[in-house]
Image (cartoon, rainbow, N blue to C red):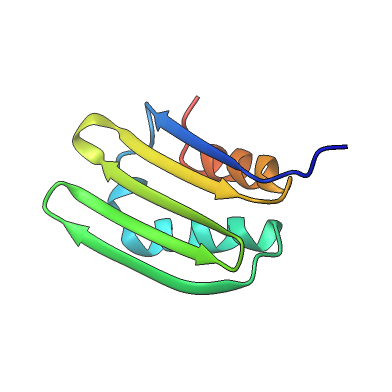
Length: 101
């Protein structure tokens, strides 16, 4: 059996709720709730608002999530890396919360 080294998931999320992806507190809560699903040990967390949207990064001991939002396009770019197989419920939760089909 080969050792599981990890996976990178890069997603373009369209038709997101534009009001939600403008609200930094909501995005921070969604990502923090998501990593709790995977029982991640968080080492760093940073969120920043910009004129066009926001970005946020959560770094875990073995994984990370980054998000960039563009509310004027109802779009978010999500990057998730996990070296465990716990990424699917985390990803599904985030996509559902952002209301992306």
